[in-house]
Image (cartoon, rainbow, N blue to C red; front, side):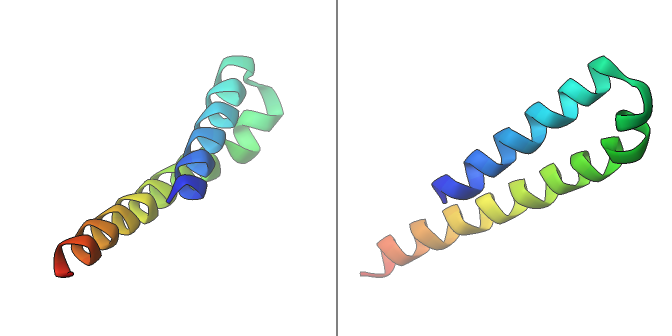
Length: 58
């Protein structure tokens, strides 16, 4: 779960840096990075829910 959260932070940081800088990098990767961030957030949330569910099942 920590790895997924760090990956979300990294994709957000790179995406924001690309947006601020603009140019060709943003045109080529801006949408992909933001979609990857949303996907990784979903993964992190699913892992969190599974962890809470597993803890409550015991």
